[in-house]
Amino acid sequence: MWSLIGTAQNADRDLAAGDTVWTGTPDAANPRQCAVLVKLGDGVKDLDGTGGLFELTATIGGQTLQPAPEYINVGTQVRSALIKAELWVPAGDAVTIAITSPNGADTDVDVTAYLLAMSLKTGFSLAATGLDAIEATAPATVAATFPEMIVQLWRRFFRKATLTATTLTTLADDGATPITSQAVSDSGGTQTQGAAT
Figure 1 (tube, rainbow, N blue to C red):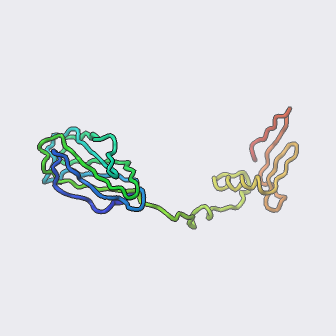
Figure 2: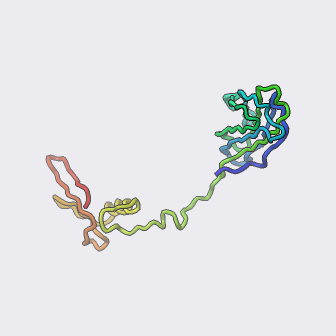
Figure 3: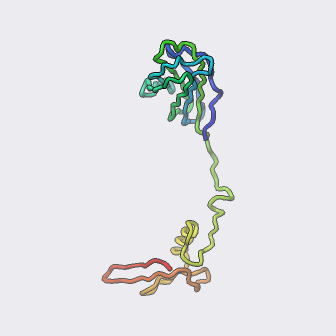
C-alpha cells in the first residue's frame, strides 16, 4: 500500500529555468520504494499549453538517477501530471525532484509534488483465517480442493498405506478403511502407478 511521505510540497515555480519541486528524506531508518507525482498547473497559474519534452531529474543521496534528465512528453493541456515510479531510496538518503519545461513562458506555474512510499509491513503472522484454520480432515475419496490435496499428499507419506503387487491403497486413521486406491504394475523394470480412485 502506498502512503504519502510528509506533506505535499506546493509553490509557484519557474519551470522554464528548471526548479526543484520536491526535496526531503523519505525514511531515516529504512530503505523505501518510492514514487513521485507532480501536478503542473492549478487552473490559475498553468502551463502555457505548448507541450513538448519536459525534463525530470531525480537525485538520491546526492547522486543523479539515470537517465538524467528523463524526458517526459507533455501534451498541450495547460494542467498536467507527471509520475516517476521506481525510486529505490536507501535509509537516510535525501531525494530531490526537479522539473524543467522546454517552454519559455512557463515561468510562473503552480506546482504540487507528492512523494509516496510503499508502506512498511513487519511482524507478519498467521491470522485465525490463515493456514492453521484450513480444515485438515482427510478427504473421504480423491481430493477435490487444494487444501484436500495437501492433506492427502501428507497422508500418503506419513499415514498408513498398503502396497500389493497390483494396488496402492491409502487408509483412513483407523488403519482399515480405504480412502484411495491406485493400480500399480511392474513390467520389465518399468513401474506404473495409475490414477487414484
